[in-house]
Image: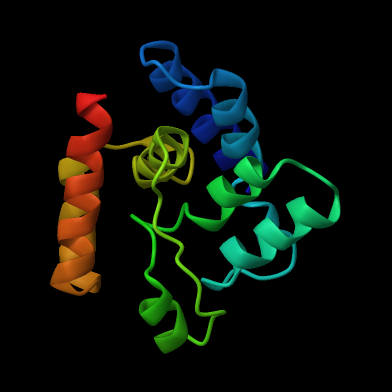
Length: 143
């Protein structure tokens, strides 16, 4: 988990360096994106991680990056269907989008292509989620 977070952090910082975004926010969000895995490895780790960030008084912008990093995010209804708090966890800010996209490009500690991620996603996730991951990638790459 820590090695994965290092790779996500470094790649997210590379993306941020080339875009008009808050680089410090991307750095913090990427470093902490999987902090909720200290309590669970389920989908709930994103919401739990955001709660941990809030409990420690970190800025809400960092908590939202952590909360929205799963795939290309989850709508409130998708969260409800997964047994999570029914809140919007879709990345909206450029910083949230960068961390979510980069996390999709890191399998363990290996950086993969978006095509590889989409191939894996197609085999395991609903089409709407796969399309959202592809749209997120296109959005981030165009920033």
